[in-house]
Length: 367
Image: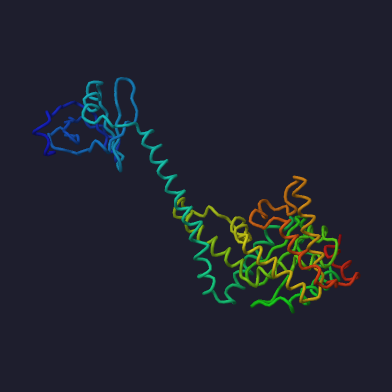
């Protein structure tokens, strides 16, 4: 019995009690004290004591008031309005279950937003340290796993999704081999073409890269495609894809803790892996231009590519790359174009492939 019972007059009412474990109805007596109420059984013994701050109003109707208490399935039913008013007099801050639920939801949202904010800042910082400890061979194996996911994701129902026309593959390998000699990194490069109209390219951890047919269709020259490939090679060299994997893993762990279960599927993991920071994109741009310069390939192609990208943005027709939000973290295309133009005057005017090789590469998907 609460110590304050000597000060406050004890009020007593009849009520009905359900323990939450069975459907058995118990006729009980409720005694109101200063800070809690006691529920007494037929033998006069205290069954439970409910602190007022833990009690919520479940519902009212038909002259009865149903009460619940935190961390319990038990229910208490007051059969008179006088009993509930007496309870309100002792505990005026008792609110409805709905109000309490909304308040708790609000607190949960604030906590969630706070955790996401902390994660947004801290996970990328920690990712660099984690990536530095990952062996190259492990990164390559991880990348191959994602490559299989990519091929499955973009596969067609009854047709292969990879373009394998022999002459086109040979021309592509010629370009990749040539650029590799001037793009220094810890990995070799494997480039495959996916038969998809998306205008994009991506680099996975460990050196596996994909080009979409849509990008080859849009490219107007081999040096233009070489610029895109050099950019993706730079992402591989700086392990930007692996940084994305670590970030994705960190956010996955956070989401599992907050929401339970795997709420981030393979597609969202791949998207996060491909979403690089502006600094990473600028780093890849600079390295790509330097690779082209060393390889004696004109940067005019990549400049034209960025110029057309800028034209698409100016027209308000959406991203030149058709995957949603892929360019949200990229430097603006006019900045990239200016960067390429800046070095163009001192760059070579060479071509990445011969005219015949470029024609074969354009037909790599047999179209």
